Amino acid sequence: MQKLLTKKSDNKNIMNIESLLEPFKKLNETAVLKLEQAKEKNKIIAGVFCAFAPEEIIRAAGAIPVGLCGKSEIPISAAEEVLPMSLCPLIKSSFGYAYTDTCPYFAASDFIIGETTCDGKKKMFELLDDIIPTHVMQLPYSVSDRFAIGMWENEVLKLKALIEEKTGNKISDSDIVSQIKLLNKRRYLLKELALLMKKSSPPLLGKELLLIMESRNYAYDTEKYNSLLEELLNKLESYENKELKKRKRILITGCPMGIGTDKILELTEESGGIAVVLENCTGLKSFDRQCPETENPVLALSEFYLNTPCACMSPNKNRLNRLVELAEEFKIDGVIDACLLNCHPYNVESKTVADCMEKSLNIPFIHLETDYSISDTEQLRTRIEAFIEIL
Ligand code: SF4
Ligand code: SF4
Image (cartoon, rainbow, N blue to C red):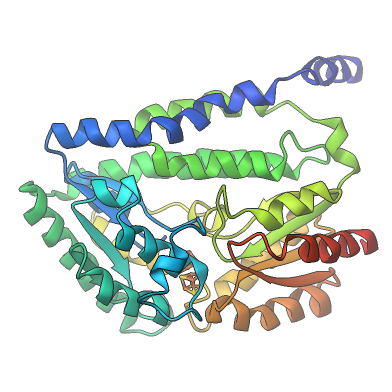
């Protein structure tokens, strides 16, 4: 038995990860064309910003949700003509794209769905509404408050009515349940891929995992996307990259990051670490849980999305509890809290996360603040290299 296992893993060492990732890269490259084709067929496109918007409701009406979080420095200077400089780069970049009309995803969107997650975003949405119709969902900040779920369910119902009006399609409960099932499958498959990083020799680098996780934003056909994920999972399940065993195992938490804003992740992996957990909302936070497939799907969705462990929630115990579990399950050597400059929710919550990791679990922790520019790259490199050195 032992002999057989060794042979299997030896053979798999020649796996070409680049070619496995190709279909996921292609989703990004062809996304704009697919949106144009959808528009020709009079499909309604809803631009979404955040992990709180229930995608199932949008899809149940036959509309297409498109992720809009800005990940480039380019439109920021234009945004600063209108917005204060002291806002997080994600808000400025997102607004800047709409303001300069330089993002094909904004251009394709018929309207925008925003949520009152943090002050900067909610005030930005008021200005965005002058450029493109923006529907803002009022998010309660406490999951445990007994009125919170009723309030959020009401917001989900208002969104449902809006989407019905925009598309002209009535959304039935069974339409919503079908979408919950499809997206639960997507969540399950993405999570299974993320869990492969528990291996002592993980099959992928964290930056490769990020590419896969982020590709869900460009996958408008969920069934086809689920098949792609399933195929990848089958190929990677028994694969171990022995080269990655030597690296220090890092958990990255904090603000959202994506390809283009993954400076800290890149530097971590250039400095001898491997990001085995990406806990932020580009990563596990968004597909860690399953939404119950019940007879009251609107309530189920409301509870499910309200429980997203984002730092805009106060208190945000779910994030801490999950971080502790992840640190133990993935045998983490060090935690990097990657925050965006001027993001108050995550930068303030950093102290609680640091105490929990360092004092309760005795795991080294570092808090890093950055933006979308390259000006701090070498400074960050020095700090990350020094951090990994001590692990
Ligand atoms: S970190 Fe929180 S507020 Fe920001 S995009 Fe993610 S879920 Fe939304
Ligand atoms: S990164 Fe922070 S400040 Fe920026 S939008 Fe998200 S929660 Fe708000």
